Amino acid sequence: MSTSQITFLKGHGTENDFVIVPDPGNALDLPVPVVARLCDRRAGIGGDGLLHVVRSAAHPEALGMAEQAEWFMDYRNSDGSTAEMCGNGVRVFAHYLQRAGLVAEGDLAVATRGGVKRVHIAKDGDITVSMGSAVLPEDGVTVTVDGRSWEARNVNMGNPHAVAFVEDLAHAGELRSVPPFSPQSVYPDGVNVEFVADRGPRHVAMRVHERGSGETRSCGTGACAVAVAAARRDGVDPARTGAPATYTVDLPGGTLVITEHPDGGIDMTGPAVIVAEGVIDPAWLETMIG
Image (tube, rainbow, N blue to C red; front, side, top):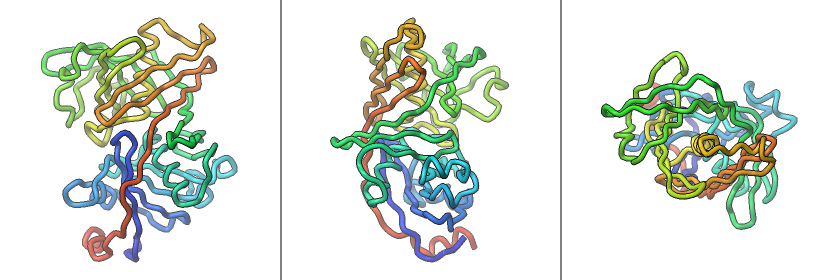
C-alpha cells in the first residue's frame, strides 16, 4: 500500500458513521489491519465502517457492473472485513459523490457487492435508495439474551438479518458482542441481529448488532429487514394487496422511512451528512504497514 498522501472524509447517515476514502483508480489495496485502525475510535479516525470510493471499471469485483453504474462502493466493516451492502453507507456514498461534483441531484446508480442500487438525491437533501427485494427464508433462529428468548425472523437484504420483536429494547442487552442464537447453521457466515419494539401503527423502534461492527447507531439494511418483518407480522404483504406499505423506523441515530412496493422493491429514505475532511498522516500509515 502506498503511503503517499491519502485524503479522507467523515460522514454519517442517521449517525451510522463512516470513513470515506476517495480512490477512483483503485490504487489503494487497504488491507484489513489498516481499515480496522482507521475505523478505531481511539487510535484512528473512527467509524462503523469504511467507504472506499472506486470507479466500477477499476475494481475487479465491480467490473461486470461498470456499464450500469460508474461508481462502486467497496464497503468494509469496522473490523476490516468486506460486506455485501450497507444502506446508510450508500446514502453517504451518494452524498459524497454529489458534494465532490461527480454526480448531480436526481437519479444515479451505485454498484455494491449486493448488486447495483438505484439512488435518488432529492432537493431537500434526503436520499432514497432502492434496496432491492427482501428474501424471507423459512428457517429462523432463537435469540437468547440474559435468560430471555425470542423467535427471530430470517430476512435477507443482500446480507443476513435475524429480527426479534421484544417488549422493551433494553431486553437486547449490551449488544457489543453477538447475541447468542441457535441453530448456528442458519447463519454460517454470521448475522445482523435486530431487536424491535412497537411505537404505533406502522411505527417501530429498533436496536441492532451489526455483523463485524457491534451495536451501531443505525443500520439501513436492518431497518428494511425490520419493516418487512413487521409488515408480515401485521399481516401486510404488498405483493398480495397491490398497495405499498410504509413503516417509520426509529433508530438510536435518527429515523428512516421504509416503503415496500407491490413488486417487492424496497425504498429507504433518510438524511446523509459529511462532517469533515482531511489527510491521513503518511508517517502513521507507515507504522501500520511497516
